[in-house]
Length: 172
Image (cartoon, rainbow, N blue to C red; front, side, top):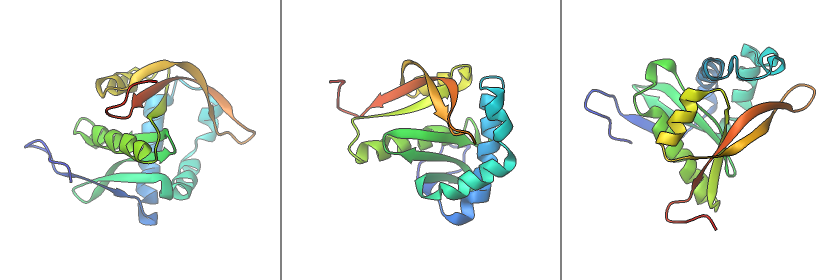
């Protein structure tokens, strides 16, 4: 359990279980809309329905770590291999250290799997998220088109790849 600031409740990180899927879906949908509307193709916005987040959250429980604050799921991160695929925090818990705790956990998970560096994609126009990752020590590795899942195949999304080297290692 992470030590909170004096005015904050403790943040507990744990693997998600199926009972968390509904909370994860709601946080994911709201956070995705906050960070992506106006920055991704309309085609992707059209397929990111409330139902799509519910289905994907339930399918991805095994890849998910949740942050719990005061008994409630406050945020989550999904990690697959060396990629931090999703990181979202409920609006009422933003600014309380939840995102930083989840991001630190995600990097550690990738490094523990033997990856020398971990990475994530952030929509090019999502300036708030980009500033956050930079404050957390992640490095902008350049622009690329992320292939977001769509019903007819990948939908290219203009993104920047942020990377973090395993602690104590340098780029080789």
